[in-house]
Image (cartoon, rainbow, N blue to C red):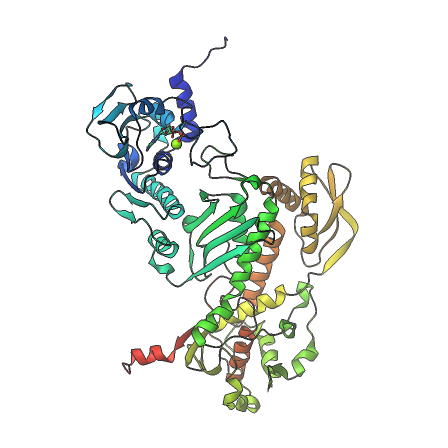
Length: 597
Ligand code: ADP
Ligand code: MG
């Protein structure tokens, strides 16, 4: 076996393996080049899913004849005028895309640069250059992609799937560059100079109207800032298609960011559902490396845990605000924040949290200045926790409470007036009709109630020792504090084992497996969500199974008690699975419906 220096065409084909995965990656490289050339109109056409041809036309600066010839040479770029790799202002700089694409297709470039007497056309396969009547910007046409590499061709999916991937790439770039107009296959249009909300509607669909929450946050040191929009939890998708994340203006699909987004919604959305977002993270370029992968979708944060915590904290705060917002917007009343501790009651022993405090139920609970006798209501909700069939609960002696009308003035969700379908509570609040999904409401309340309790840990007589590789031990120990706050107290046990001294009393999990999973996660992402996620799942299921069911009849007192509890519950707007808990309909809308105005 003798060593040989590979010929250029082979080197390019090998490089193409990394850069040119499918038609979408070709489009990405060509559109990025167009953006780098200063274009503000880019037209993309993809025929037969990209197999037959991919054309990108731009109105950028174009190339002179000399530059055109050099552009398809390996490692030839106009984007590193100095030798400084730390100061990259363009999307590309490797000088690899054009030669790589040319090596696996038939590529032709038409281009015109200002001041030139005419345009030029290059046939990248033959290397021929000839004058052309092209008179503005650049057109790159890629035909017969992968025809010379049948193995790659085999991996292409159906035309529609490939076009959808192309669309996704175009959407990402269109979201990043709202000053530029994009047209794909004469079917998808993203006009230039849209504002962010307009662009989001064009990219994500009109159903986002009025349902995106604005984010505007910066860290104390101002080293890190985040702007953009996230969806109300009731607005969600079955996949991550409508999650748009940017770091210093570049579209990325970074694990740290995706994980943080998911963690922020953990309490309000099912793990199999995906919030929508367009989030722009800006940080000092010194603290992030954007060039770790050739496709540049992943980034390396210097302090991933810091970035993650910043995102989670700010998004959660915004989501928790939605109740106050909605009530203020829809009902014209601002919700007074109440002491949530008064809810500290129905927590079952089997969760090993605080035991139920019977004395709470006997007192008249104090809502604002008004006293309501809700003793039996709470008892009944307790009973409802074991509820399996239909159960009609009535209690006449407290019926009068609901008729004290003005007592309800200050409650955002108002006064219950009845129940329909044994599923929905109707209430009147100022000039609004309020409709509440009773199951969703109670589930939310129960979940938040449980969540607010401290986890009880159980010291172990004999510590559980888990053997691991030393790198894994180190990884787990970096999140030891986080684990401790979730009830798992551990320490190193020599170099290659970890000993668990205390565990959350309520759980028995496969600890060895959990620690290994945590170690993998930490090594990969710099953090772990395993433990919190498991806790979350347990709580959400518990809350769902111990909540008032749809189909259960409630009396006015029970309904009012439920309304008051929702008002005092963080994130009361959605149930744990993200369904809405209530809707507010202004009477003025009813007036319109009845043609009174
Ligand atoms: P890179 O973008 O990393 O520089 P490419 O292989 O993608 O490498 O492109 C090589 C060079 O060709 C670019 O540096 C640029 O000078 C030129 N070029 C490519 N596409 C265009 C375009 N659409 N308009 C003007 N110049 C272009
Ligand atoms: Mg490029």
